[in-house]
Amino acid sequence: MKKQLGLFTGVPTRMQTLALAMCLVLPMFFMFPLQAHRALARSANTVDLSVGSAHGVLGGSVTVPINISNNTSLSAFDFTINYDKTRLTPIRVDNGEAWPGHLIVNLNAGGGEYVKITSLSNINYANNGPIAYVTFEIKGDAATGRTNIDLLVGMLGYIDEENGMGELLFNPISNGIITVGSTPGRFLTGAIKTYNPQNPATIRLMRDGIEADMILIAPTPGNGQVVQRFTFADVEPGIYSLVVSKAAHTNFTVLFITAGSTDVDLTEDSREAVKLMTLLCGDVNGDGFINVNDLNEVWSARNYNKNAAQADNPNCDLNGDGFINVNDLNIVWSATNYNKRDVVVP
Image 1 (cartoon, rainbow, N blue to C red):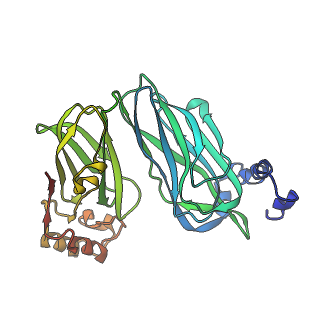
Image 2 (cartoon, rainbow, N blue to C red; image 1 turned 120 degrees about the vertical axis):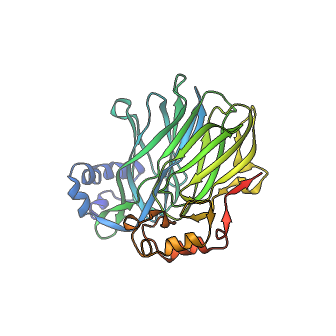
Image 3 (cartoon, one colour; image 1 turned 135 degrees about the vertical axis):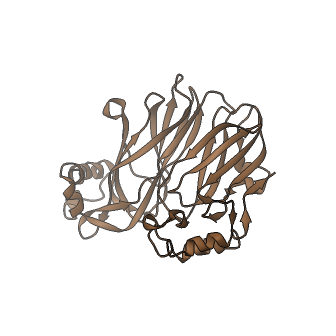
């Protein structure tokens, strides 16, 4: 393949490069069976792909990024973006800061069922961040609430000096959510920080002791401590409290949240603890207190040095790496968590 890249004399134009790549590279990925992918060289590192989240109102537009991280050598990709066509209409795709290459976009792929984004380059890019931005129009008669934006990967490649085209490996994808509201100025957003994103988190918006709305942050790939954003739509004016709960963590409650005629972004709240609501981790027995009982539960022969799937209490895998060991003990024992209870921010 490296000899074939010399077909053009001098410095090839972008269109020449693209045409050559289309002729030579795409057949390797799309015309041969899956076994052909496995014969390609594979990258030493594994990249992470994600879709961002956004919110907007009926008749408006929203833009979500497609992000890459841990990348050292991307030269080609083929993405499919799935969305709810009863709520959204794709209207454009733009380059992200991490990808200067030409994008081939089909906004009406599959008869309007999904968006296709393809790009091929004759060099590797080591950039990280947004690869592309996808903008949707929210239909005027769309159902309000949350809708998923899912990314599927048909090809992710790099130029290998010895073998031509190589295959970039990637971790399970973290997909995005668009929150649709009916009224401008009625969104309430915030961010939480917890361990083990493979476990869901529940966020309850309370008013006068009654649940006004609830968000379940679904399990996502990864491990360790992560930040996740959330958005409530169509929040009526009033005084609210927010309760965040998650397995193996103590609860985090924020009191006196005032919603009015403008959007509320809790990451800009005057209370420092509210800007990034960090749940304390280590309450593996769920009694609301992180103490010696939790240490003993992790240390127990029923759990310690076992795979989480084989343990008596899989919540002892606090960091979500699939194995219960000293790293999990240290989370419980850390001064940040040990001997602490549920957090309440007045």
